[in-house]
Image (cartoon, rainbow, N blue to C red):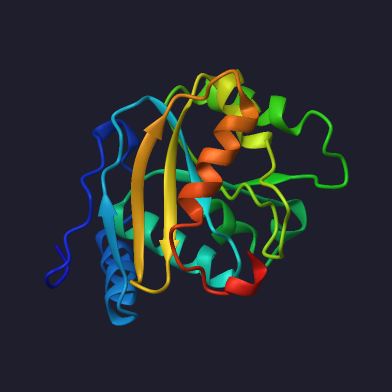
Length: 198
């Protein structure tokens, strides 16, 4: 507990090893900015935080702060150019996994393999793939989920209420278009940082 803010309980197999000070500072930052985390972390061995709407760099700041405050061993995908000194060590500490965007072929298979090898893993993905306006969510996260036998945790960032909500847990179905439309509809129900990018 930090003040009156209680973060969702993280199952033991998804707990990180962050020191108490870093967890406390992350929680204090969120509280000072007026943010809270609602919902629950699933017990599933492998799941993907399908997070959106993604319209600002602040999404990364609040999302990663929540992960540190909850002490969840969550990972995220970032372009490999971020994983160079002086940022390299902190990017890995925050759970980053570098990917080569110039060679997208095989990325989903590679990430799914890492998840299967890890056994227990929580992975954060923003399916827009960019902070800018997109016509449709990308489907890579669904391919990763299917190949790694991972559930999907719909996670929204609502700037109107300053709430990061851990919502419905889905099993990816055969109809990718229907899955994407449903998730996009959940994102549409909250207010992003930059609505003009939706």
